[in-house]
Every structure is written in C-alpha cells, then in structure tokens.
Length: 392
Image (cartoon, rainbow, N blue to C red; front, side):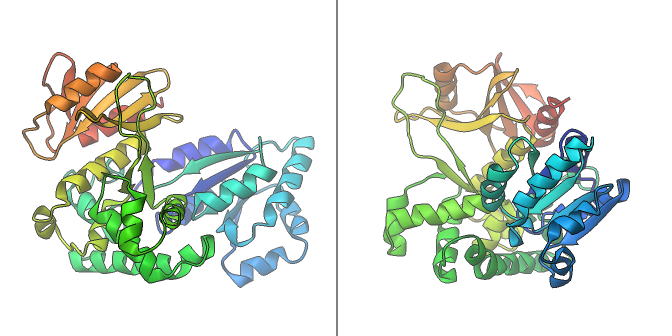
C-alpha cells in the first residue's frame, strides 16, 4: 500500500465543500483512496457499476440518500447514473438549510468529460474537482529511490507492482484492450477499436511531438476533424495530454500547434510493445518517453491553477515545459536524460524571449548544482518535491 498524496487534499476539500469529485483513469486507485477516507469518517460506499448498489437507490434515490445525511456518501462510477446530479443538488441545498454544509458526497469517475458536463450544470458552487493520476515519484521513492521501474512500467499500481516485467507488460496490454472495447464506446461515439488503437499507437511513436492532425488522418485514412475528435476523447479520458504553446507575447514567430503526450510512460511502452528497460534503451522513443514522464510528473505536482505550456519558435528556440505558478512567476524547465546534461543554445534563446523568473534542467542524476548563474540542474525527485511544497 503506497501512501497517496491525494488523500490529504481530498480530506481537506471535504472539510470545505459539500461535494468533492475525484476523477482519474480507471485503475489508478480512486476506489482504494475512497475506502481509506471511509475508514476515517462515517461513510457509506456505493459502486454504481453493480446492479446491487444501483438497486439500493431504487426509483427514488433521494429517499435513500436523505437517510444517509449523517454520513459521507461515496458514489463510485457516477457516470453510470448521470441522472443523480440534479438530485444531489437538491439534497445539498436542503442539507445546507439544516446546517450540513460540508463533506456530504465524494464522487468518483473515470473521465473528466461526463463529470464536468453533468455537474457543471447541477452542482455549480457546490463541488470541488480533484484529479487523481497514477503513482508518482514522491509516492514510490521511499521504497524504490531509482525511478527506472516507475518510468518503464508507469504508475498504474497493478502495472508498477507486477511480479515480473512480463506480468506488468501484459497487464498494460489488457488495460489498453479494455479501454478500447469498453470505455471508449461508453464515453464517446462508436469508434472501431482497431482504428483507435492505431491512433493511440501513432501518438506513442510521436510522443511529445507537435500535433499534425492532417498527417495522422492521412495515415489512418480518415478526416482531420475525425482524428481531432478521437484525440479529444483520449484527452477527456485522461489518457492523453495536449500541451499548448506558451501564450505570452514574446514577439517571435512561434509554433502554434500543441504537443501531444500519452500521460503514462508505461502505456507508451505497452503500445509500442517495449516490455523492459533494456529494450527501451535501444528504442528511438527513449528520450521522448523520459521527457513525457518528467513533464507529467511536474504538472501533477504543481500548485492549483498553474498554467503549463511549452515554447518553440521557427528559429529553433525551445523550452520543454513552462509553468506559470500563481504567486511564484514563470518557471522554465528543460528535460534531459543522462547524468551529464548539456543545454542547447535554443533553450537559452527561448529564456531570453520569455524571461522566466527561474530556470531548471531536470536530469537523471541526484545532485543539484548550478550550470550557469541563472540555471540549476536538479533531479526529478527534488524538482517534484519543490513544486509540491509550494502548496504549503
């Protein structure tokens, strides 16, 4: 059992709001965390994927939920019963009139799309949203200081904890198949599983590349708008991240399209059929896979309302990750794999353009040291911890 950093923020949110929505991909540990919360306060847990728990709600769910007013109600897989959202609004408002203002409902869902659409209409001002991702480096570092296993297998707990590399790899391949056959049709328009897998695999080959929907469409023999809609769905399922170009006015001619990353490095390797570290090191994706893991880790650790972007100009100036952190300014981060990082001139030129307040190179080593007067080399663990501590 890994201590998840999300549990403290979940408890804090429940102490300040009537409903908290915990969203994230399947199998990241949302239910496990919710059951930990249930151990800490009087609660009732309902898994809305099961007919038994849906039957408890019956035809008049308000009657059942009203009987639980003195307990936290945990509703897992809420997208299965979207008609509950208006009922929750009425119950929250009734409870507020009787002095029950916080900690009423913990809502779990496997995608942002349905939760945001349904609850934004019904629970505005009554709900706090929280995203829970796979295991991160701060959660695994105490038992495994070397991040290689986390990088190769990814952070989904069942994959990370697989008995062997092969077991982990097979778990991820099955996970991909389940998403293609079950969740993609559930959340979006009917998309042939083979076509979506080809797109997902092409994105893995182009991990961290500039999105060119027309080129992808040509390879898949579909239209560019169709490719865009399919990528939208993978983004909504929290499996893919579109990292937008920095919106600040540097006065330069910049690349406008977003960069696209598959959010879990283990899924990148499973899609490309890379089962272990040895084969990863010999694969062309190795550098962009490490970059994607670092970027995803740092974005997840950054304080709330941090704006993440990248910067690239037609002349070759480039910053892998820019974090505009409320109260702390703009941070520029270059990502390098290896123990002796060398920064290209393009990074320095980009910093001259956007003028960040802090500059870092996140590399594979453990030692922090200055590379120039303004630039620090730093480990992924220390950089993640630094960002996490900005919350305090």
